[in-house]
Length: 439
Image (cartoon, rainbow, N blue to C red; front, side, top):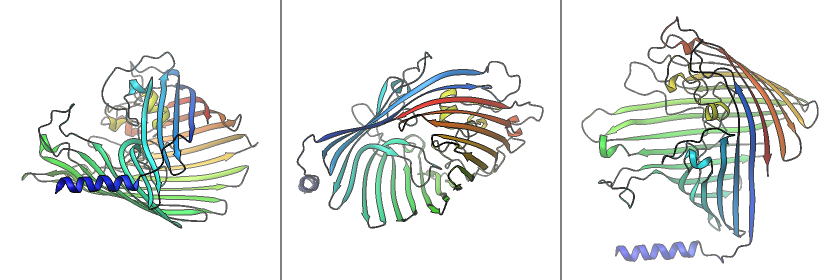
């Protein structure tokens, strides 16, 4: 009977996805950038030895290819190539994938494919099956673009969009490569998103159920939680508004035995407004991510963050331009808790910015930001992350080629003194210029 149902399911899938297969078209798109950077301090410890200033050039090529079989059926792939520092040391070989890639860091320094999936626009909806992007929804805040093996189904009816997904984040089943002696140790995520669009705006919510069971075989517990992300974006006259909330609730450790479970919760919020008057524009941002309350077994922070894709400053929470290439810039706490340029966690963030376009091709923007921790981590004496001023200018050389020149100065806060008021911290600044080609 089981074989009968498997055969029937296979026949059903063949009927659903049947199409005449022929190579009709190939479409390319992508981006190449080359940049130079100078960072004055690679540690926020004043007069620290072994942390000199740094300056180097780096680049990346990203190419997305769509093999269009029919107007309703295509194969989508994407790869990154030569993502490296010019003349710099190559990364050591390894087996762990880079944080935002299907390949390792050393593979990305040569070439690494990140995506390969089928996109089929069926009469009953859109199917995406394979390895594709995951970790983005709503606004840029909280987003962490990364590839994952997924099955997605989406349906649009007028202004209403609904999408369901299953994502395999890790598989520990016994296989040719794995000698596992268990049959339930996978990490899976199940998502459902609904969105309503109107002229000038949209609003929606993403609901995700997460079950990470990779720790069950050895430690007898799994992580299970729900994540809710409502968001809205609208334009009212010259003002563009964005808002997003994040809330998680569940268990950091859900034990199979009599050991007491460890509960988790978390909250984040984001609000951005930008008024654009043509030659001049001005805006402001507020962001919040809850921190963990010391002295409790429950985790109130840590699961949510501002995300790798949201980079509000060049240094402070500036993941891609500083952390990705320079590495962690830390104070006296030599752990990730002491990073200044990693993703935003445990923080209140406030930023104002103004910009001018003296000519159509030139955009000059200045911003001033301040951040403080929501809670002092265990052992810390202060909450003040600091104040940062950034100034950038972007010139559009052609429709596809632009050049950016920028600088940022961080007045380092006493948070980075860690657990000793006598520890001295230094201010920091960086300069960057980047040439970007899109096609």
